[in-house]
Length: 86
Length: 137
Image 1 (tube, rainbow over the protein chains, first blue to last red):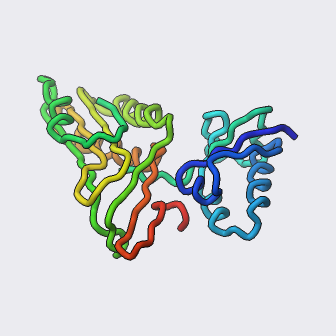
Image 2 (image 1 turned 180 degrees about the vertical axis):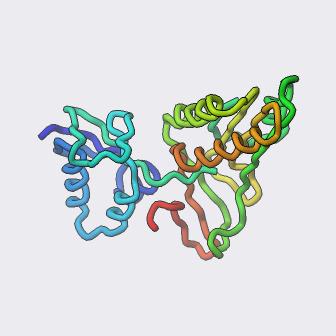
């Protein structure tokens, strides 16, 4: 397990109650499990997370499965809720 | 002209930025404005915020259109911060040789801004409630 940073934006920041937190995880899937687990029963956070897209060290994860995304030491995972520009 | 910022947007400035192109015979201008309701609920005001890398995403959308259409000049600007009903949130302007391609390119750019550019919108309703648009379902 490596230490990584979760960074939350907009609705995700509000639902998470913080803009950033450090956690232990080695894939994106475990990172998401960890942050959900820290807020067990918080359906608002879980809903926003389920609708969000992710950047790992500024690179979009896209549609790749979260358990295939390996996190290097010190990785920054950004949680981007659905965009609503225009 | 490409930009994301909190200053009020000017249709005249954006138009001027694409108008001085002798080879362009059609200029299409899309102006997105804050409206007073969303799905039947009255909205009082809106707050837009953006990811720090927002310009890279905006540039990507515009470059994609430039590679697909005969665009001779293009501008796309989006406002962030607190906006009121009637304020301009976004302007896209495209100058092409002919109108069809100008319409198509402009539409693609505004559609892709909505889909792929990391900008978020929080709306405040008259009943005191507020929500992040699209984020919670």
